[in-house]
Amino acid sequence: MFKTENIEKTYKKGSVSTQVLRGITLSVDKGEYVAIMGTSGTGKTTLMNILGCLDKPTSGKLELDGVDVSTLDDDALSALRNKKIGFVFQQFFLLERTTALDNVLLPFIYADSYPADAIERAKKALVSVGLEDRIKYLASELSGGQQQRVAIARALINDPDVILADEPTGNLDSKSTDEILEIFSRLNKEGRTIVVVTHDRAVAKYAQRILEFKEGHIEESV
Amino acid sequence: MKLTKTVSLSFKILTAHKLRTFLCISSMAVGVAAVVVMVSMGRGVQKRIMDMIHDMGTNLIVVNAGHVTLVGGRERQSAIVTTLRPGDADAIMDHCASVAAVAPEASRKMNAQWESENLMTNIIGVTPAAFEIRNIEIEMGRNFDSVENDTAGRVAIVGSVIVENLFNGEDPVGHQVRIGLALFEVLGVMKAKGVDANGVDRDDRILIPLNTAMRRLMRITYIQKIHIQVASSEKLQRAETEIRQLLRERHRLRDKPDDFTVQNQATLIQTERESARILTLLVGSVAAISLLVGGIGILAVMLTACRERRKEIGLRRAVGARRRDIRTQFLFESLIIAILGGFFGAALGMLSSFLASLIGGWTVVESWDAIAGGLMLSTAVGLIFGIFPASKASALEPIEALRAE
Image (cartoon, rainbow over the protein chains, first blue to last red):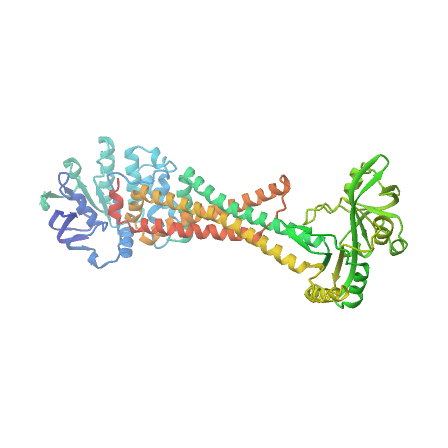
């Protein structure tokens, strides 16, 4: 699925440059549930943004399904994010004055073709995360846990190969956290690849593999 | 991304920010409405002037005795000139091939009396031909004929102001009115025509046969004016030259300057039309500037939106929106504002013009080209002022947008 080779990322601000990633080499296979762990500021979000083709590495190579993403232009990267990757962010990133249903439908708008059964599929995705009675609610009317479940439904709608989740439970209480992690486990059992970035060992332990961040490098831990 | 999806998406975003959208649409609407109202009113002024000129008669040339100048848009005669005679009118009719009809005229301000009522009014001696040449219509009774003119009959046609002020609104036909020392029988009443381009009230007058006016009332041998109708508008210029030549010969002027003034309706129309056109253009441009202000409003709102919605832009990019999708969406938002503003503005403009004519009594000409122009201009403004924010929004890197505070 993912294969990185010696990825480095350096941020430059004026004359000061900060190296966040110092040669990350990892691979994630199809159907795996991987947690990337590390304390805050270690660069795990940066790595996830690079894996999700939202950001570009300063050097190194990222292959997604055998394709070197550095060869793709901006449009191709957009199409790739639309088809292959589902994002779940810590801050949910829902359109506030928009219904749960419309939020879930968002990726379809940017797909090659808008499916005829889009609304049915969106409803099904919302049902699968337990929000059948919140379909017409505005995002701003939902609780944090519900909002994150809408975000998961949105991530699932285009049937992506992988779900990339960045601190998906960082803004949630323990009950909602458990619910979200249950959903991830279930999705993984259904064959979906899941990569979760977290600082929380309790969250990471749901994964089959844990990769630990240390000073810009990555170490495999069991 | 499909066009219909883009449009419906932009609509959804605009309806989610109701107040902002409403204010933006309003500023555009006011601009477009201003264009429509101003142009309609300008055209109204133009139409009024044209109507006034046409009311004088068609294909008209007016010969005035002496030197007549326009001062502040009004005719001013420098001195009484006695060289213009009824014979001149006959000669013009006989010798100028392009002339279709002539109507000589002699007038004086005199006292008119009916029962105990008195008033000073314009007594105008005309030949029966004047009625047709000068579009004078009879509302009640009849006009006098050539026999009554030839025999200097004491008959009169009165204007509506005379009916109101001298006859106290009563039907004057058949009554006797005293003009100067002579008694005249009222034959008819003229249809109201209002004030002419020179500011003269055309309803405050009494028409009597020219011979009666010259021989019985004013005791003069000269006339002040000759209204001449030319066969067609193309012949106006030629007729003017012929008339000028003929009158100079008849008055034996040789190297002296003209003792008459010739006014050609074509020149008058052209001058008036040009000034009205400039007026319309001027007020239209002022209104167009307000449209531009509306456009700057859109620019400001869309730039603010672009900043406020950076996270949204980032999210859309994350779920697969391409740069051009973001650009199109922002552009459509400003276009929708501009087009809706245009339509509301056009409706508002038409309504205001209608109310201006209904309540204010303005002459308003519905200007479909101004409406179409206003709509096109607002669309163009939306497009032009939408491009910059749209490309700014689309230039954002997805990760920068998502990280925005």
